[in-house]
Amino acid sequence: MYNDNNAGPARATQKSFDIIPSKTVIAESNFQHKSLCCFSCNIATGCCHGCSFCYVPETATIKQEARLENILGLIPEAWKEERLAGNHWGDTQWGNYSFLREWDEDEFKKSLKAASRKVDSLPSDGNRAVMFCTTTDPYQTLAIRGNPGKTTILNSHRRNMVRRSLEMIRDFSDLNVRILTRSPLAVEDFDIYKTFGDRLLFGMSIPTLDPHWSSVYEPHAPGPQAKLRTLEKAVEAGVNIYVALAPTIPDEGESELRETIRTLRKFNPVTLFHEPINLRAENLERIETRARILGRDVRSQVFQSRENWREYAFGQFDMVERICQELSVPQGVLHQWPDKDLASKGGFMKMKQMQAHRDHGSRLEGDLREAAEREWHNQRIPWIQYWHNTAERISAWPGKNRVVQHQTAEILPA
Image (cartoon, rainbow, N blue to C red; front, side, top):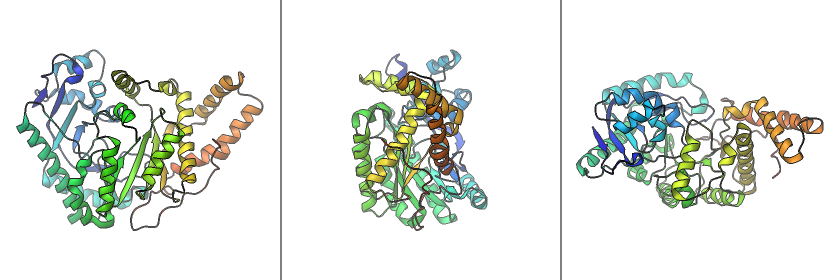
């Protein structure tokens, strides 16, 4: 096992990369309301990109902390002390560790056969797809300072797992594949992508085109221009693409968001997924910490309460939908990801109460309450129910007719 602890006592510089005794297999996806996939294939625990908004640490890594600590030499002592002090290093050290899984061809093939038998019983919004990856990035680079030999071994292992698993899905099943990455390293597998034809969709996460904000929210990921060049190469190679405008950030206004969507529109993506930042675990603290390091001020006040967050989230969804209409993004291309917490009427009314107090200095009653009730029943809940309905909001797939979104509610004015 290898720990990169040569940079001195600062805990943020400690890194840990290695291979752990867990097999890379296909598993049923735990995504809700995403319309991304039926299955996931995750090649690692952890991710070198270290996106500050990411909530994977809460949903995956922190549950494995004790187990990972028991693998001799894998976790730095300082990280173990963090957990004993009541802090989850899975959260605080996000981006500083990535533990690749083992490759066992027989085990992978077993999981592939099981998925092929089960796929028809799963919701159709998964498009019969296996997603690489849902809790990590399939194309991250593991760089171990002072140990080029181990660096080569780990990166070769990562590449072999991704390529061989793709080949097996292609040759031994009729399942589709969805790739999601932030890395231009994906270009190395375009040759395999093209052999899938319409069975594969390649996508990149691009929340902003501003490299300064990208350095806050995606600290170790390649910058926006590198991602755009990768999408351009994919289009030139004839690979089907989609884009995840996820998450849009509160620090950019309508003009910046319009320019991002205008730029992404030029690639003619099959789908443009969108969501704002959702509050999970320690992601707000990670965002603020990263911003302080870079000397930037972030609009963290939108996360100071659930009411503030709901106002921000609804505003982002409204803005993206309005911009897509103005830019004539084809129907069925935009696909929104509203968090399940937005489906709470009680939460919505608390948000309206906050707005009434702030904007009118009054309680939510009389005409204000009636207007809030109308907005909830006539606009908000039909919109949320559409995107949370697995039978309706199936995302587009190459070779199939694009799904046209039902117009369940008028878009609110700016």
